[in-house]
Length: 385
Image: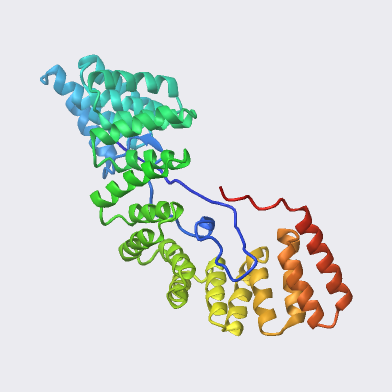
């Protein structure tokens, strides 16, 4: 009788290197549609055609006195669910209350009452009802999960994690509880624990691409790119219309030196959605590595048409223009990059080389002096133990 769900969102700052190095593929979530993920608040959800008509039928039945108390309690409960589905929370709460007066053991009526209280923001009342539900049925996964959601909203993350794990232990197919537990483990830095949960979800629901994708993401963060690649492959097969798995797979291909495969994945992304600026940057970097600097400049330029503030596109276009001896444009691009990302000694040195080649030795010397000053201010690299 219940349903819940929520979209998690994840964004991260953009990082840029000073050479033809792919921008981190885990850092551009804002530009991609994240795979489907669990629901946010416990709520009573029933897709019921013509609920008003069914409410009238239950109301007519409830005028009869022939049914026993348990049957009448169930009718009040079912009508309450219909009221909740139409947004009549007051009537729904009244019906759940009537069901519980007739049959205090009607756990679903109590659980749905708790869901409705949670939906209204009456958190303490909802928690009290969930406690009563779980006293009667300690393994009711929906109540455990929903109480976990409320704990999480209150910032009680370890308590929430305990509830999600308990819900998942009670019902190994409760994907929402497992997803949230894995996300909390991941946020707490316990990536191996998160990976274990997502692996089980991927095995249990092999056709759900988001679980394969999350396994790939965690394995990539754990420094296991070959395993990550297998999961991204599966995610891409399961949902060939979503760019995220292709984007992360392209990053793995690029860093492993499989430049053709990386370029193909970026091209696939752009077929799906040509408005994704970072995909143009990625393909541009792949083209630059293959010494197609003219093609790379076209792709970086397209990225900048989409987003003038995309610092990596300025940087990489500057490098490609240097490689094709367009020193004037290289100087412009690197200058625009540093306006957005700040001065960088390596970029200053490259601009100095371009200035020399463009016949501006005085400005080149100034850039080299600034670069040396910045390097002098930088802390020495950490020594390996």
